[in-house]
Image 1 (cartoon, helix red, strand yellow):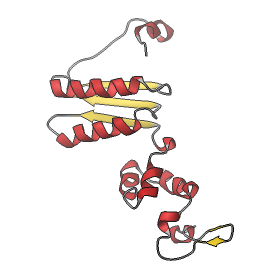
Image 2: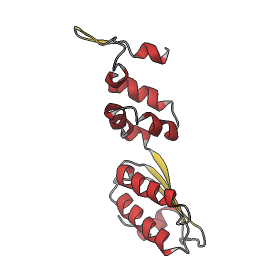
Image 3: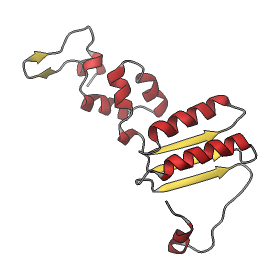
Amino acid sequence: MHLSQLCWYSVGKVNMATEDGCWERLPSVILLEIFSYLPHKDKIQASSTCKHWRYSLYHASFWQSLRFRADSCDQNSVSRTRYLASCFAKKLRNATVSFNSLDPQCVQEVAKVLHKLSENPNLRRLILMASHCRLELPGRGSCQKHYFER
């Protein structure tokens, strides 16, 4: 179905097939379907269309996995990481956090992200990608579980 055809729909006796403002009145189910085909970058751009589309962007199904990046040389990455953590940290199932481990500002930002992620009961996988260090845990599988607490 062509995107412009999705604009036409009826709810009871109300016909919403008008040209003006049609896109902002698309049902959430249709918006979620359309957004499901878009990469994250395009979803974010599309969400600037109107408040209804912005609200649809925050649906948990779109934010199963996310990569956070903190690099003080790139102020946009720090701002983006703050924004993503504040909006989506409690909805994720998988998170990857990459950062410059020699930069105190980056380490502080990552600590804030980790704190928000710790409040997420649905988080199943967390990958920390520090630039200059490595963490290895002794043992395998169930033996490692006692090293981590919420």
